[in-house]
Image (cartoon, rainbow, N blue to C red; front, side, top):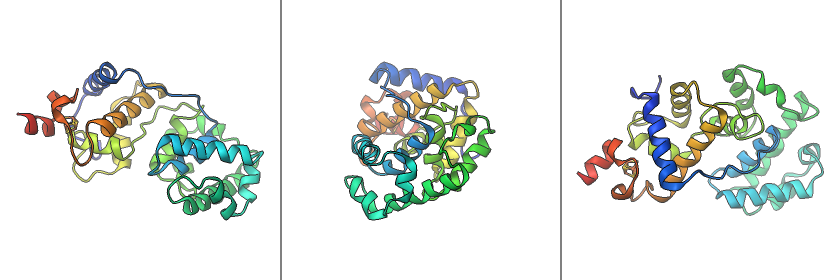
Length: 230
Ligand code: SF4
């Protein structure tokens, strides 16, 4: 398992259960179409969910379909999603990705990704402008496709590193592959839940600057936390 130490599936299930006890089950919200989730995920980088969600809603309200977004000027798209970070760059990526999708799938229907082997589905998405592993995994997992693949964002990666689940320097791709491989029987919904729980932990307790290990539900399993709290 590239990038990961030797953890058992039972460890991840125990962490998930402890996080559910601490935070409650996170709301997962309505699932978007695959192309809608692709666009939302491109808008989401380094932006709070509420802000990127509002930007996505504004985009959908302004344009009647994805073809119109693909044909719109970048500046117009950027003005529509202006509240997200790097709005100009993201607008350019959204348009370029949608143009590429539209050339290959004129109906913008990405349901075919449900049937491809996971690695092929990820690779198909990662050819698109602005799409790395996190956006590709989110498109497959958090959309109506509901595919069992781990989403790993910066919060998840930090927590997984401090827990020792991934080796120092492992990137989000390696971490996603490690979590996905560790849990071959998890459903798409279980992977999404695990991502949201780890993210919550990273946002409120295992923050990058000051982890509060003393109140962390995972501290007994965490070498970083044990070193801090004794
Ligand atoms: S014990 Fe500390 S370092 Fe480990 S996951 Fe919890 S907050 Fe992060």
